[in-house]
Amino acid sequence: MKMGYFISPGVEKPMTVVRSESRPTISRYGKRRSEQYGYFYESLAPEKANRFMEPFLITMVPTDVKELSTHDGQEFIFVLEGEMKAQVGDQVEILRAGDAVYYDSSCPHLVKCVGEKPTKILAVLYTGNK
Image 1: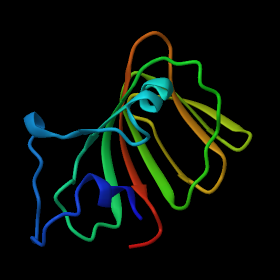
Image 2 (image 1 turned 60 degrees about the horizontal axis):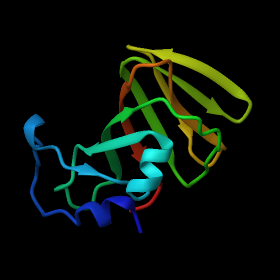
Image 3 (image 1 turned 45 degrees about the vertical axis):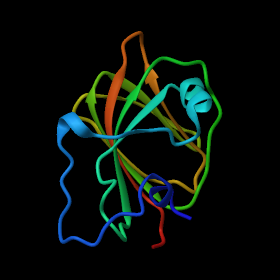
C-alpha cells in the first residue's frame, strides 16, 4: 500500500487545493519514530485520488540518527531553508536553500538536518506504483 492511502484515500476531482493554513500534519513512521528522525511532515496533496507522487513540506530538526533507509521509488528534494545532509550510498552532499537532489530510493539513503537550526524542504516521493 502507498503511504498516501493511509493519509487519505482521496476523492475524484480534477484538481485539489491545500491552503497554507490547512495543511494536514502527518506522521510517516509514527510520532515517536518521526521525532527520533527529526522529521515533521505536512501533506501537500491529501485529497488527490490515485496519485502517483506524494508531495510533502518537511521540517527537519537536528538529530543524531545515522541509519540509512531503502524503499521502492524515487525522491526529489528541494531545500527551502537551512542546510541538510543528503547521503546516497557512499556519496555525501551538503545542500543549502535553493539546492535540489533527486535519487532512487532503492539505494541506501539518509537525509538529515545539518547545524543547529531547523531545515525546511519540499519533498516529492514517487513509489513506482499506483
